[in-house]
Image 1 (cartoon, rainbow, N blue to C red):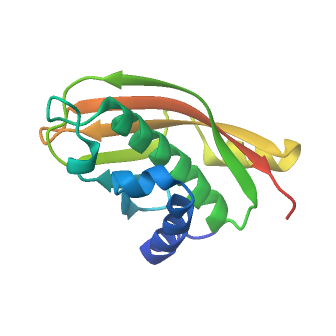
Image 2 (image 1 turned 120 degrees about the vertical axis):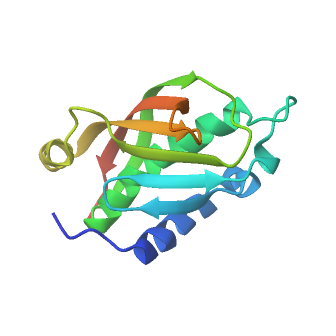
Length: 157
């Protein structure tokens, strides 16, 4: 695999991906961090608030899904692979309210391998990968978790 892309690469590519999704502008989603293996997205509470004054569950679902989708899309872009990425299925758990900034991090789920995913993509033109996404609280406990499977389908390179 190629070396880890820098943060400027991630910002440029995620900005273009997020610009294609109108909801992300309303939610004010921004890239917080990317290290080639995990992606962290953030959004302020104000445009994502519910009637109780904490984060809206739909915003948490959207942010965690976009973090998972984004880490796959960035990895493929860094490898110069032309693919469409889709969420295939997911399970979300809301464990505690979020009263401040929404911050979601996505990384490979336990037992998953980028290499196995890339090998399947090369052999069959599509690959599947499970990602674990989380929104942590200040104390380190999870406010929300999303376990999702993403599919990449190879385009014409």
